[in-house]
Length: 508
Figure 1 (cartoon, rainbow, N blue to C red):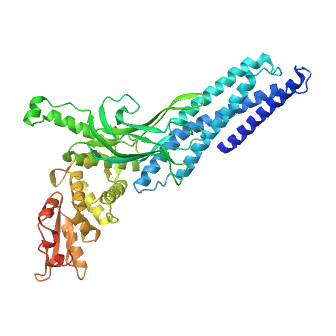
Figure 2: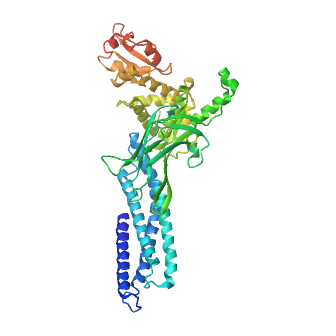
Figure 3: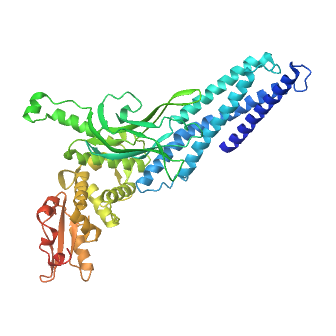
């Protein structure tokens, strides 16, 4: 539809210019305008037609532009994020290119409408006497109103022409070096002379679009927009070696606390609250213009990320970041209430999909969690084998103690188990399929007994946090033994090949 409007408006502009030129030629030839001229009222009749055409166009584009910049853009950005996570949004059948083409086509329509409106305005302001003075002022006012409306539409669309294509890490530790990228969407002729300098600032998620109270220091926060070599439609700004060195959004410790090296429970709670608070990066291009439209602010925000200072805050920050991906997959509202409320739940089938994807992405391995793993993970979480009726909330996942492990949440257990598997020697065992992972003692025995030439396997310990147990078949004793579990720190002292398991030593 946008293409049809572009053609129609272009044709009208050509007709307007041709009619004005023809009338000017007649006027110049006669040196005066005769009321009996056969073309006397032709132009007067055509101008209302062109203004009506502009009215009809704007009545169509106004709701379409609002939908494009809200519903469609939100769905498009969600689809990009899901694809980055390895998911395909089956509910969204619109391709990425379809949205980008629609965005560019809408800008082209606005450009054509502005061209026709300014041409008609110039014609009305000319001294051609064929234009009836009785309605000239009214037509000029209407034309000016149309131009102002088009300016507003152009400003609205250009303000959202920037999109983040490489998000900051989530969670993000203080002083961690990272890269991000933004892209300027194709927007008709409007951004050909745009300011090519992009600046980035840190803001709290709750204060986005407001004046941010927190003071932050972000290094390497400027980059230039450049055209990609292989695709002239892609204009991208790459930010390299960015680093947040501080976010001053917490109460400072008192002098006596600093000297003594002690932190009060109150300040500890404040630090935890800061970790639970999400932040965004705001990317902005200032002072862009198009024709008479000046001071256009183009900006966009990254996805929220959680910022932490110390290693002991990483587990909670990672839980918050993971829950954000769960909400994205569930297409839930991304407000702060959804993170902490006990009332917001997702189904177990959706949760296990997100958990399996997170596990695979964190480890960087092709071997994902198997159904038997997820079944036992669910049993650890709920205290029983999970069903499709079970629900998970952030509170259940990251705040509620496990039935069999005091002062330990599900996320504490899972995160430390995942951290163990991620260590280099254990990851090698996992990738080779020797680490069966999240299985029970009885299942380990059944697995070894089911294989004719089985010797050993690894499983996550049920008695020690962040540790794994080696289950070995002792043919000389005709029995299965469970060796004492060991964690990542133990592996630094005792290489896997020195563990008391003859079969294991032969393959390490």
